[in-house]
Length: 582
Ligand code: ADP
Ligand code: MG
Image 1: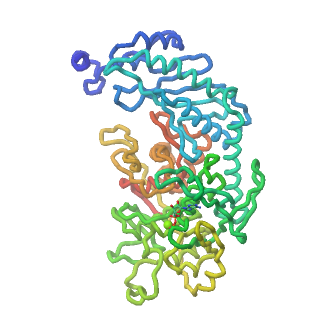
Image 2 (image 1 turned 45 degrees about the horizontal axis):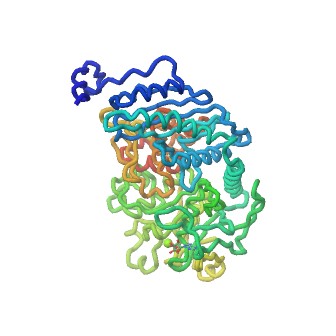
């Protein structure tokens, strides 16, 4: 076929591409929409590689279309285009405030997705959460910036110029018009942003109320199914009603006063029979670190932004974590304040997860008995009688949860239906009864026993070797992608984030991979900063420069992860090397 013959023939142009066909020169001269249309129609029937000549900017008058990356064949991942419109009529009231700006961009992105149904153009949008993402952004100056995938059409290996012309020269301008502020549902956009602003204000009000979380009356917590994050609807849904003793009112900028259940700082236990809604409540709290779209049912369910879900994660690697508070003396004689393993047990993985979360600044832990290692949670008297203290390396969480709060300000919300041991240490006990929460603190206290706490010394901070965080393969090429839902391919390594439950958007996994690259290459991990300090530095840069800081050169979609998920990805990178503990 011509492709192969051409290859051999033009081999001199190889440029290290292993005999790859040289790329066609970009189209020169006037590059406006009329020219693009002409060129596409002219290309009809030409060999697919000619599409590459489209690369670069095209002037459409009030916006610029940039062909950023062209797929090499019709079956490769979609090509990438950018649409940049300096003035889309967005009023400054919708973009001056960074929270509103994120919400406005999210609203426009979702609108774009609906408008692009049935076209070859694809825009990445979020699920139930409103998270900053690369695909649709509004600038601090109100500019609209879209990054879209396009499956460039072909008849086999030949260019389908007519269809391409329709997509690029008609669909794209239509989309830009549809997103013009004068054309959109302005009331809807404002209400969407108002709701997000309220959520952020509510989360921001938690500390002054002494709370770690808030669940509004009327909230709908259950989801449609185990695989759908949309709200459960219909008669079976029991909307949330706060118990009187924990009821709190908060004034919000747009919605006015809302009431609901405040989860106080300290240790809160969620109990109740099986299937009474405990895990559903905890899941809502896990996701309460993010803002939700209006109508989600959880748009007024918020958790402190530093809340981290803790679970056991057998088999994960651990790199020089100080798990000393939980693990005293291992049968191997290993130093548990400098603990390294390729294959952690249920209990040591959970201990590492807690110590790592606290290390980078989490002061709110969320724990569900469904996903914990029992031997790290409790130890009853009969077991203590049989296995003596000096034979048991583990200090159970129940003995550490109070000093964690008293001495280090780390609160815990814990679901526990199977054991009463935590009655001894809980500040508040909430019982779910057929999805209705009741404050049973007094009753639980009557059943509590004396308990002697263990000591919790703050885990040592780690300094990471930036050279161990490398997204390149052995051939020197950057490799960063997501595989099988929850595996981040990062250079030579596969990072398994299946157990990192607060990755709530597939784009965040890519975002975390990009963040690792920026951490290592952007001077944040500089060989002397601790991991927490490096994350502070990255966060400052992100606040200044926005989400594109992570992927200016990256040809794909991604969303912004929190520092806790970035750290979680780093901690699961098996190539990670720690040079020092402080
Ligand atoms: P638990 O952890 O107490 O065993 P789950 O939280 O797993 O219980 O909930 C059990 C079932 O009840 C799930 O199918 C969940 O979707 C449903 N559910 C939870 N809360 C509600 C609610 N408020 N209204 C209706 N169904 C609910
Ligand atoms: Mg459960």
